[in-house]
Length: 127
Image (cartoon, rainbow, N blue to C red; front, side, top):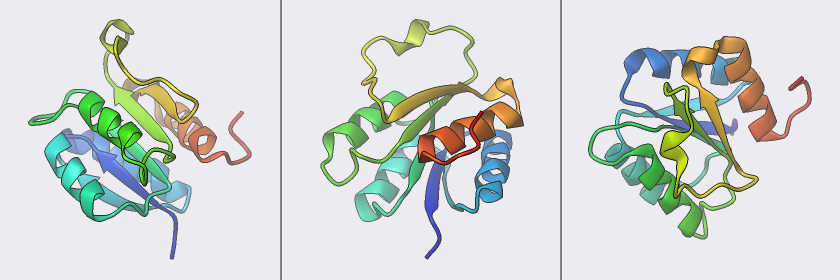
């Protein structure tokens, strides 16, 4: 079974970009259109190598999904990329920051997004 990634973003275009990056790294993609759907998927399926979360999503924000991931034993070791369009860090207060969590600005381009995925997965070639 191929490694899988959960991409949770309410912006279809962002999901398309993240999917292109993930598939280039041979990851099978599962999509969620909002935070609530992401939580439902994670409650039923924990077989993910990586999770990519948008910050601002309807129903449940990405930060809340991240907090849930980091408190559930069977999820807490999965690397998470928090994807944001905000160019500042003002919204990052109170966010669980650890060695399994990274932040990528989605406007930074496909190469930077790919480097982030490679690094999160602990693969070579992230430079």
